[in-house]
Length: 210
Image (tube, rainbow, N blue to C red):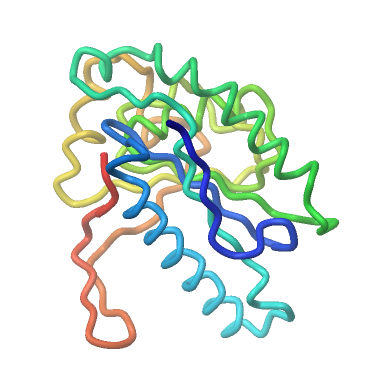
């Protein structure tokens, strides 16, 4: 079973985030956590837009995309077969968002985590109406330059969490080409420990499923 679950008014959102999971991502076991994270992402985006004084600050949406058969073991995750199979459906999904929106200048941001970062990279290399891309916990991207993602310079980002064994170890085997941190044109986003408003402390970890 596959799914794509949106939080917010996707058709009328000025900013839409599409998040892609990786190893062992299943509707049966992952959809609850991914939808919760989508809600948090949307709420934070709206909060930042409100602080910046944007009109229609709440016109944001976040989508948890579970639209592929994610690898569920080490044997499968060490190959790009599943990623290549999923790249087309994700590409078509992004194009569908752009085609059906009621907003003239909708801005789509693609988020790819772990093996999902490879899927996202391959999907965008096919040409997708995406404005920004963030790859994190990535085992590799099959990229030689960020321009292959089809976004403007300075709009391709990556994150590496503290003790991120996927991002720091798997790319050394070369199965998926260069890691984002080794791709020219990619910009690093900080995951440093920091305080957030309220009784929260960030620990520099990436807490989404692999």
